[in-house]
Image: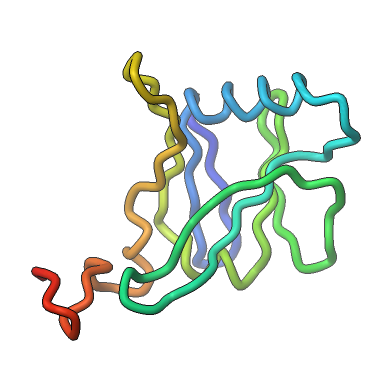
Length: 120
């Protein structure tokens, strides 16, 4: 079952594989973790960077997706860049990682930088 976070026009999806891995990570930590925080940072030539970290608290600006055994936090600014995005977890036997799909849907473009010669 995929999870979906809907806030106004913002929508972000979490695949079942990603949700299961988030739950596993939260349960395996010895710390007082409230959930997983999705963040957006940077900009510049390569575009925005998307990542996740443990969340030990919830702020008044957070929106929360409650999964079966996990909570995913994203603040309202990050959600502007994550609208239409899907977070997946891929383990191909060599590398295991979370993958952000469709991250440029809300702001348009491809993420390539025309000014530095990258192909668009």
